[in-house]
Image 1 (cartoon, helix red, strand yellow):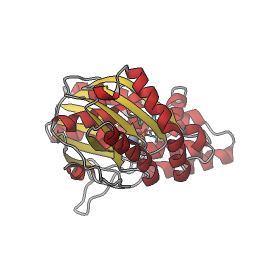
Image 2 (cartoon, helix red, strand yellow; image 1 turned 60 degrees about the vertical axis):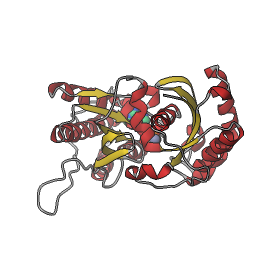
Image 3 (cartoon, helix red, strand yellow; image 1 turned 90 degrees about the horizontal axis):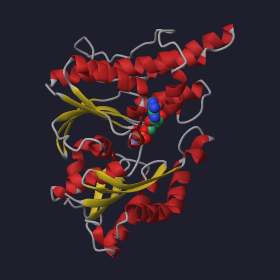
Image 4 (cartoon, rainbow, N blue to C red; image 1 turned 45 degrees about the vertical axis):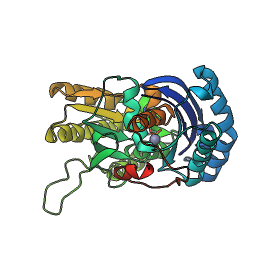
Length: 345
Ligand code: KG4
Ligand code: ZN
């Protein structure tokens, strides 16, 4: 196994962590949420500049917290795709520079592989094959993890990702950004059955519906229409709307994920990405899986949203298989996870 320092700067968190095998020795996350909050979303140019300001501090904190020195590391990794190009460049340039200065191998990591392996940080025995439900601000994917680096995409989003739907619904209800944690908290005081909302099924040309793909834009529009109608009548029951919306998302994701695991004969499900922190999704999925004798693993709460420990964990998996990246590796704004082997020599 290995000890890896990893950097994550693909979006609005500057993060550095050191992981030894599956043990987190340090994990520093400098969030930029305050900076982007007033714009209701991430402003790419501001994100890159802030990463540049924060990266050196995060690096020294991560080293200090771990109690290790640079000589103790086996490799230095950074998220290199997908993400905001300017933001990714900050992390990748820092990682490559440190790798050259300290004469260590450099590993570029696919951001989604980080989310997949976040569950490893609380489950030392977990290994493929398993189904990963990846639900973040940009993705709603069902990934068949056959082995490290070998993936099959079984289900995806046709429009808004799960986290994006939380953020957009929170914005239209004037709740703030990011929407997921705010709606999660507010929904606890609302009635999840107050408003029936559409599940968003994808029709197939041959008839019937796609069993694993999701679509949340219809749900978001339904909440918008309902809000406008309720506003005409008087006060908007925000907690009931939040609870009904969240309940629909949790039900849809649970139904599709369990169906997918059963169809592919997979007895283990892992969940990753910011929406994996959602309390109702956790409850629904755990209850449904138990009925079918399926194990479900979630990452520790603070490792659901973007962090560098998950990137280091993915890098440990690759490093132990002999994967190392070229020092000329380029960052990429988009990259399908199935092509992840292109990142290694
Ligand atoms: O994985 P992540 O940190 O960044 C991406 O790679 O996209 O996910 C961020 C997303 C945001 O859309 C945020 O609203 C959502 O995760 N999120 C949640 C919760 N915590 C964060 N969604 C639902 N419930 C939560 N508790
Ligand atoms: Zn992410």
